[in-house]
Length: 91
Image (tube, rainbow, N blue to C red; front, top):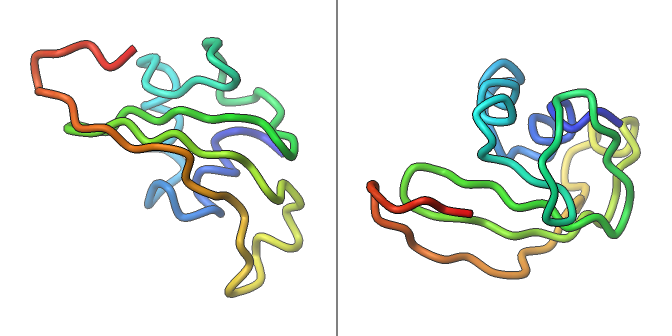
């Protein structure tokens, strides 16, 4: 599944266009590497997402689009979360 679509369906961002903008800015990494919106997400990938004041690190548990569309599907687990200052680079 595409990264931008995963972020939306996993409810990590509200809209797919926001996910695409975050990825383009370099605020999302897969397995500690830069990525594109079209990058494929697989189970057991580690994704880091830099929001405005925090960085969330997750492990992908489910990357099946059909399962993610169902309510109450657990698609990821949190590995860590850390606060960042607005002027600090997250990665």
